[in-house]
Image 1 (cartoon, one colour):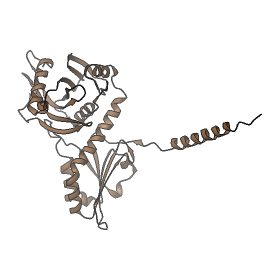
Image 2: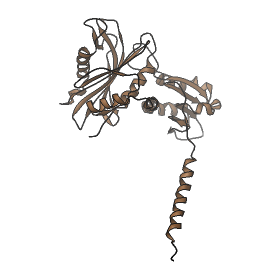
Image 3: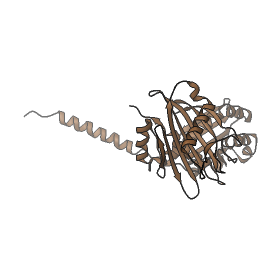
Image 4: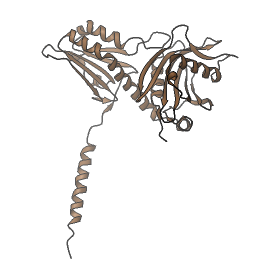
Amino acid sequence: MKKNHFLPNILIILLSLFTIQSCELKVPVLKHSSGKTAEMIVVTNNEAQWNSKIGKTIKDWFAQEHIGLPQPEPAFSVVNIPEPKFKKMFQLHRNIFIVNIDEKIKKTNIETKKDLWAQPQRVIKITAPSEEAFLKAFNKSKESFTLLFDKVERRRIIGTFKSFADISIKNELKDKFGISMIIPGGFYIAQKGKDFIWLRKETHTFGEGILIYSYDYTDTIAYEPKRIIDIRDSITKQFIPGPSDGSYMKVSQDVIYPFFKEINFNNNFAIETRGLWKVEGNFMGGPFLSYTLVNDKSLKVITADAYLYNPKEKKVKYMRQLEAILYSLSFVEE
C-alpha cells in the first residue's frame, strides 16, 4: 500500500494556522475609555504652563460656548493634569490633549492617535520648541482637533446605543426613507405621514424628539438656510402640536438666529443647522439640530432633525446624544 504523504502536510498547515490564530487571540484587548460626556484632559509639562497663555488659549477654544443652546454651556469640560501626575488611570480617558514644550527640538510635531490606551479614545499631542511655536500650530489646526474629539464622542455614544437599538423603528426608517439609523430604546413613533416621521422619548424630567422628512430634489435651493427653516416650520406646524389648541412648534428667531454650516456628513455634503425652537402660543422651547442632505440614488432631499425640551437643566449632554443618533444615518443600498 502506498503511503499517503498528503495527510501529514494538511495537518502541518492546520496546526500552523491554529498556532497563528492562538497568537492573535493573545493580543490584549483595550479597556473601555473613561470620562463624562464631552470631558477632556489636557496634559501640560507643569501647572505653571496651564496658567500661562498656552493654557488660556486651550481653554478659550475647547471650552467655548456650545452653539445653539439657550443658556451658555461649554462645548467641552476641560481638566488639567500636569505631566508628572499623568498616570495610567488618566491614560484611560476618552479625550486627551497633550502639550509638550521641548527647547531641544527644532521642529514642531503634531501626533494624533486613535485608541492608544483605551477605546474609544482620541489622543492629540503637540511637541513644540517654544510657546510661540505651540500657539502657531494649535491655532492652525484647532478646528481639526475639535472634529476629531467630536467624532470620538459620537462613537462612544452610538456604541452604547447599539446594544439596545429599536429594531422595529430601524425597519420602519429603512422601508419609508431608504435609510439606516440607530434609534435607542425609549423612543416611539408619535406621528407619521407619507414622507415624514416623528419619534418621541418622554420622561418625567425631559423630552426628546427626532423628525425625519423627505421631498424631491430639484436644485441647490434645498441647501439654502431660508428654505431649510421654511420647510421645517411647515412640517412642525402640520405635525407637531403644542399643549394648547392652535399652538405648534416653530423655529425661534427671537433670541438667536439659527447657525448654518456646510459639513462632510458621513461622506455626504450636508448643511448642519443649530438653533432654538419654540411653541407658537405657548412658553415651551429648547434647542434643535438638523442635517439636510441629498440621496444621490433616489434624488430625494432628506432632513434628520432632533430637538430637546429640558427646561432649567443643562443640555449639552443630551444634544450630543441626539447628534450621535443623527450621525448614525446612512443610505441603504437597493
